[in-house]
Image 1 (cartoon, rainbow, N blue to C red):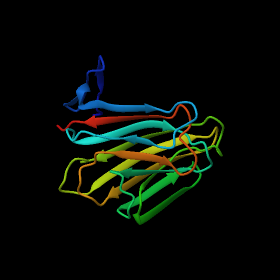
Image 2: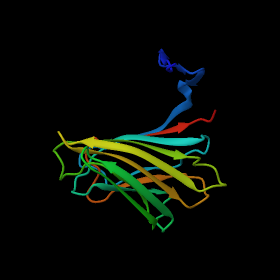
Image 3: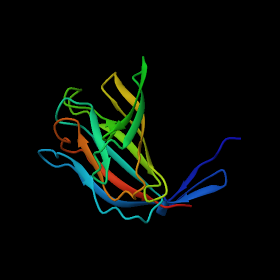
Length: 189
């Protein structure tokens, strides 16, 4: 038997006897980059009233660098560990690193196809729990008109402090105009 999902007025999703209310996700903040770009995007004063956080976005950089860095609470010490898997339709690769100064996310840059943006979803689990380190998982990708990449990243922040700010900085240049970032809080069950 396959699950049946029914969407009713955007309010509830049913399947296998469970449901999620539309209030499970609450918008906390959004940023749309204006003319001239932005050196970074930072969400600050994040309330500790949710179970998890999610950032959804589209992004492109103004310089030729594929990576962006992500830091929590302005911590740029060697308190992060990361790994990623990527595929481009003909090959796959992976990478891992311990004791880095940030987490990573990859999106198109000025060296890629003109006006191409990457899409991503970042889940930050148990961000306010002061009894554990924090984990982020990222699904992202971009199409370059016949080529491109799909990537799965994760990183941890070895700190038990609640996350109150998140900063995303391009590896080079700025976030390009029209890049968009939306932060959501996810309520627990």
